[in-house]
Amino acid sequence: MTDEQWYWDLRKNRAVRASERGPGEDVMGPYDTKEDAENWREKVEARNEQWDQADREWEGDEGEA
Image (tube, rainbow, N blue to C red):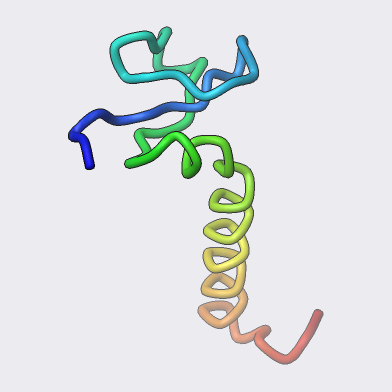
C-alpha cells in the first residue's frame, strides 16, 4: 500500500495521481486508490442520496416520494 492519493480528472476523463492533478474545480477526490477514483460517480451518487434522505427526514417527508 502506498500513501499516494488519486483523483478523477474531469477534463481528461481518467484517474490521475495527486502529483498529476489539475485545478481543484477539474477533479474529484482525493481517493486512496486508483480504483476508488475510477468509481467516483457511484460514491458521489450514494452520498447525495444519503443527504437527500436526511433532508426528507428533517423536513418530515420520509414517507413521501
